Length: 234
Length: 258
Image (tube, rainbow over all chains, first blue to last red):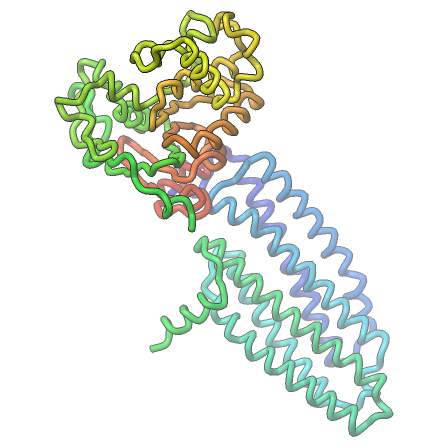
């Protein structure tokens, strides 16, 4: 099948939409990279910069929404184009949410003082969780940019690990609160940070599912994931 | 359960080949058309979809150089069997064309013509009822009930097309064939015809040729894609427009064919 539409301006619009989403993905990745550094170094300035930069993510998400709206009205896309255009609304929303969650983490860093929590192990664990979430986001965005869904199942599998790390971190924070009740005000924000990171992991999984839908036309349900798991176990 | 699983096949086409002299127009078409559903035939110009539609009521018989091979069964009867009465066959299959073509008669006589011709209605009161019922089913009665003696050609294009549908259903067909029924109509008249098609499918098996992908998506439960005289893909309309199996289908419905 030729990749190009008879109406070349339709191709231009689809490319602009995809490029915009890749760009939005880069902004979300940059925000998450800032989260990692700010957590490691307790860098309040970087955290504040990340909070301020979220506006750019929100504006781009709105711009992409407008582009999608116009494509639907003008082109009435079908088949892979329809899956692609419909899914772009979801992906841009997931990325915008990731921006919001990075902003949430950074607000906790700016308002609280991570050093007062005196829980370097928990901070390390949160950095580790950030790295795991980053890996998944990188994989799904790479897939999206290439029009593939190769990493969808890997991302789904590793999200189970992320959920498990999240649960361990919560337990550690609870133990810290019991042992160091005087540090509770610095420890509670760590709960929120862990929660935000775990939710960013979920958004990466959501994007993986959308990639799968774009490529195959099928919805990646939990049952289907298990089926694929069984099919791929030798 | 979706409609495609629910309904049985009314029309079964097997190994249909059509030739215009030495030129083959259709190649081994195997297609079942389900009862009381709308089936869309789509494909680029010259792909054979209208030729196929016209095989279903043997309209190609009038073209001397046209030869049809294979079998088309309606209710398990091969309509190409020599003993089939073509006039009787066409009384079971209504046809609506691209351009509205009312007879140069009154609105009333346009609808009454078929039942009178086939001698199915003997009493005037029964004929009046049949005309009213057909116009009501075609969604036209309210607009023409005070204009029944006016010429059919005096109606608007959309009304004329609905008059042609009323004329087609007045003979109580089981199948209605439509060859691009909305291509000469404005969007409002098109919407009325599409609404009507949706209502008519509860009583009739409808096959429609359309160049509008969106129309096929709106009105039909099954869609068949033809290309260069071959049936490339047939399936639930939702499937065809969401994730077709064949690359050629995808290329066509997304506007990449060329």
